Image 1 (cartoon, one colour):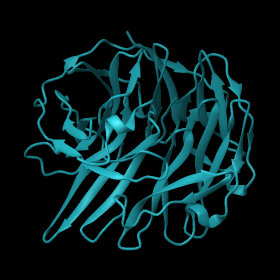
Image 2 (cartoon, rainbow, N blue to C red; image 1 turned 45 degrees about the horizontal axis):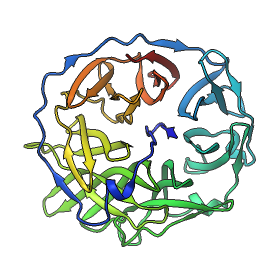
Image 3 (cartoon, one colour; image 1 turned 90 degrees about the horizontal axis):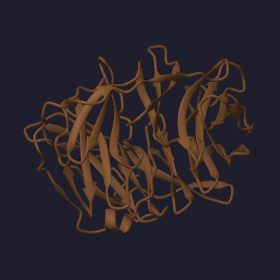
Image 4 (cartoon, rainbow, N blue to C red; image 1 turned 135 degrees about the vertical axis):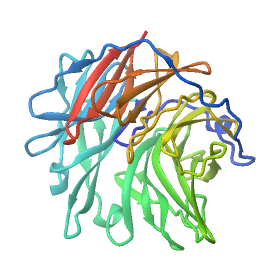
Length: 389
C-alpha cells in the first residue's frame, strides 16, 4: 500500500535485507553531472471538487480507492473522504474522543491490508505545542485511540513527522529530548491500543555532542522501515549538514545509518526529505544547497542519482516523495519559486514539465493518474489529477 503526507511520503513494498543490510553501508558520490533537463510531455491538470467547506490535507490509496484526509471549516475539523473516480465522494465515519481530536489536522494517513492508521495534531496549551492524536480503523470507520498525555507530550517532547508500516505494524516517527544532547530521532510502536516510545539515545538514531540526528519522513521497506533525514556535524569552527537514511529490519530496530553523498564542490546543506522503495532499491529525494537532489540506494550503497536536473527548491519546503504511475517512470513533485515542477525519470534520463498551481505537498499514483495536493499562500489546499502517458 502507499501513502504520503504533509511530510510527503510514499510507501511501497521493499525487501530491507536486500536494500540496506545492517553492515557494510557505503556511499558512492559518483554521478553524472546535472544536465539541462529536457522538456517533458505536458500534463493536463484537472481540479477536483470536494464537499463544501473541506480543504484537502493528505492522500493515501487502498487497492482500488483514494482516501483524502481533509480539514473542515467547522468542528469537528478532520474528515476522511473515499473515492474511486474523483467525482463521487463517500465520507468515512470518524470517531474523535479527546478534545484535541475534534480540532486535529491530519499529518499522515496510511493503509495496509484493509487497515487505516493515522496521526493528527492541533496546537494548544500554554505554549502552543502540538497535541497529538492517533487513529485506527478501516474504510468503514476510523476511531481515535486515546493515549496518556506523556506518550507524545510532556517535558522533552518534540514533534511527530509521520507513520509507516513495518510488517503490518504501524511505526510513528518523531523527535524526543536526548539523554546526551539535543533531540534524538524517536520512534513509537503499538501493542494493543497503547503506543510506546522506543529507546534511541546511544543508537544510530541518537544525537551526540559531535552530530545531531533529525528525521523528516518514514517509509515502509519490506518488513522494516526507512527514515529520511539529515545529520548536523559539529566540529571546531565549522558546522555541516548532510543527508542521511536510517533503516531497520523491523519495527523495533536495530537501526543502521547510511550517510548520503554530497555533490562535489558543494558546501551547502544536504537534506533528505523523503524516500520511496521498490523491491530492490530506494529513491531518496531532497535538497543540496537549495537545489533538487536525489540518491539511489541499493544493497547498502548510496550514490547520487544520475542526471538530476538543476531545479531550485523553495526555501523551507520539502520535495514530495517520488511516485511511480503505471509501474513505469519515477515522478517527483518539486516546489520551486516559480511554481510546482514535475521531474520525471525514465531510466537515467530526466525531463521536467509544469505542475499544478500552488506548492505541492502530497502525491499518489492511482491507476494511470497522478493525484496531487497543493497549497496556496494562505495555506488552503487544492486537489488535482492528471493522466500520465
